[in-house]
Image 1 (cartoon, rainbow, N blue to C red):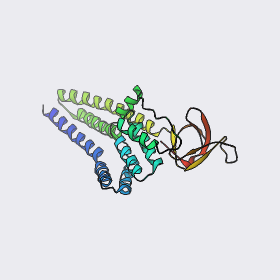
Image 2: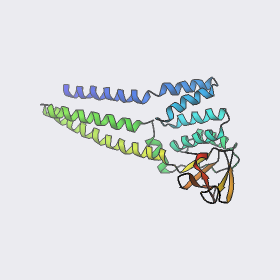
Image 3: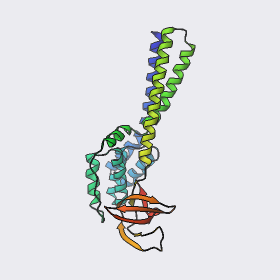
Image 4: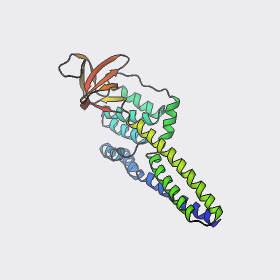
Length: 252
């Protein structure tokens, strides 16, 4: 009985540590929210951008997109609304804001507001910034320490309790690693991009000397089909295909 209480207290302590780790960025996020409310949009952008390298959430990207919209930076606005939608497909608030921003874009593109079963799964997997990565680390720590306690315990009941709890911790840790990998893979997939040049000529080949296929403008979303070291082959709309230089786009 005493051994069980010790294990429970230990697990609660570790869980509190996980929560503290995950909650650390909230201060910076709230600071950005306060700066936004005070109409200090540049400062809010700096605060939100400080989180983007390590943490991902639809709320963060949505607020960052809102901040860029307030300073009329439409390419960045659409980029971060699209990033938010990638994490939270079908979110009505994100879709509403994205449609408003797209009215400011010269080259209209259809916004996909349908939600597939896989989208719902990834929405659940990405329920908190880096949650699964932190979770897997702590679950393996818990499992390892419980196995050590199992090896040194002389009580049969405590041995059974620590062993099975350790196995469960390891199993959940493996699932957390899988979910973390799926989350990261989805975030790092570069299937779409936003144009960041006021006007750009799409070439028929990945060369500045090739013929011009058509012209697009800043804020336009394009689908990436292929790439070379310096160029992307993209598709716009239902059929327009051409090449543009990577330096003029940001991938979603």
